View 1 (cartoon, rainbow, N blue to C red):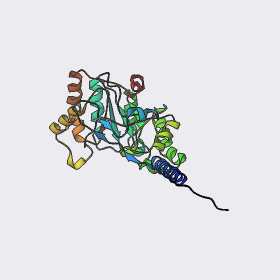
View 2 (view 1 turned 180 degrees about the horizontal axis):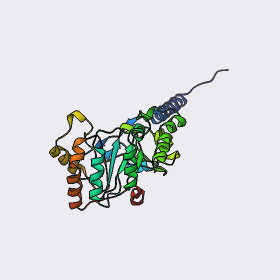
View 3 (view 1 turned 30 degrees about the horizontal axis):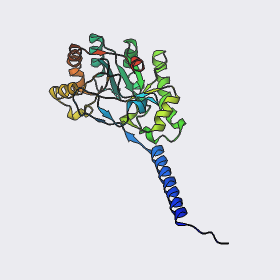
View 4 (view 1 turned 180 degrees about the vertical axis):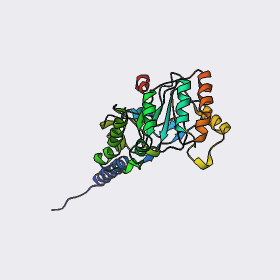
Length: 262
């Protein structure tokens, strides 16, 4: 028996095969797509463009900015270790009556429990920046992901007697959609940022003038600001930075208000 393939059938078969291949490749890329959070600052004092939209992130209970309708600022700090500036930062926040969120790596709970307790006692959010600051996109299973998150909750409770609020920031902003889904499964809100600058190089700290100029050009309604507590410059300009933003009509809000405004 012979099966005669007409030209029309041949073209249809090739087209279907091509579509299946493209869909398979697309699904593979989506499933394995690891990326670092990045921003494009095109217009001063306007919300930058991220490598995911607010709408795409919201599907996973994740944010990089608050609402552009209100002049609110969300001040956050990444805390990997103590360089001698964290308590100075806390002094300024107390003086200015400004709330902040501190995303803390596991070793800091062990080395500086008194500072962690002070953050809690003074009304700041102590948030989760993983146990060992790894590339979280390499966590191949949900159990691997949990192993970087749950120990910090336990450390925080041992120090403060309270449950840790469930805000998470992936180290270096490296993530994939599975990470976001895993964080959501654990009840976490993933928090990226819409304002940052190069402040983490301890031996190459920016001048006060450069830091202020860069930050003030990037601030916008609903900004989630990322600063590092290891920065000497940040500790020295923070009071002036907060005062300047207050004079421009901004208010400083807790991350607990983030979902309410979106």
